Amino acid sequence: MLGYMNAEALAKTLSTGLVTFYSRSRQCLWTKGEESGNTLTLHDIRLDCDNDTLLIQASPAGPTCHLNRTSCFDGSHTEPGFGFIGQLENIIKQRLDDQPAQSYTAELAQSGVRRIAQKIGEEGVEVALAATTGNRTEIVQESADLLFHVLVLLKQQNLSFEDIATTLQDRHAEKETGNPPE
Image (tube, rainbow, N blue to C red; front, side, top):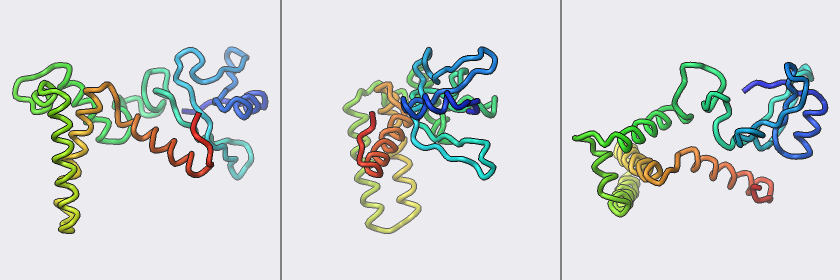
């Protein structure tokens, strides 16, 4: 997203760790997510070469855009992030919601979490076996099967790939800084 920051907003961002902007229309500070809960937790601030623009890197807690999108840019974009993974998550969710006949995803979900977990185990073993052969095509194919089944499990449990990415990002940040995420 793009936002305006004055010196006071920058100071509050640095002191709280939550990204705060200055609303020129309302003439006041506003912390991203103060009403929606979709906050931005500060990770890094960089200054551009002209010293007149800040690039803030932050972890979002929920959608960044007020239209409930990952990004405020590209208005046609309605899928969550991560390219096709986001689209696939939406397809899986739709199949879980609609339960169409002839849908492997719906059938798998109806079989229950044990069956989904069993498929994840089977696919994980197949990825490992493919890795031992060094067959790149087989590794990719089996990894795609594994990821698909993990996505089904995540959706069935009301979780998302973004939850996994956020956890990985937090672990990386903790390793880099030595500080656990808040």
